[in-house]
Amino acid sequence: MPSVTGMATGLRQDPFPSECGSLPVGRGNCQRDGLICLRRLGNQVPPGRERSRLNLQRALKRFLKITVASGATALVLVYAGDYALFRYRSASNRIPYGSVAVRHYYAVQHKDGKTEFLFDPPTAQICVHSVFPHGGHTPCWYLVRHKEPRTEI
Image (cartoon, rainbow, N blue to C red):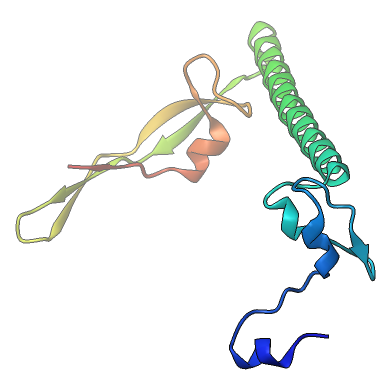
């Protein structure tokens, strides 16, 4: 039982059994009511917990490496397939290129804080029917979504 005088003076009670204080540092085998004495260990972790922590770190690191490698491999395979399809369409003249009308404009900032917009006439821009850009041309799906590019001046 804790002493009443210790509580009256405001001293903090020791939550660990008194026999744990007799163990040398680094040995945490003292048990009472299922509690392991960790006070004498300082920042050290018991050997069983250290092994499980290392195994968990290794497993997470391995999972992360496999995930990144799989993602990179999938991206390379998709790009290679897209390029092969583009080359096949180009070689067999199966309409690999398209055209999208693009209306470019300039946004000119004035000193008084107002913005003036200068529009160019619409021009047909050549695009590629593929997922990724090939042959120096932008994919058509991207140009359809960005028909009015803006240039800040």
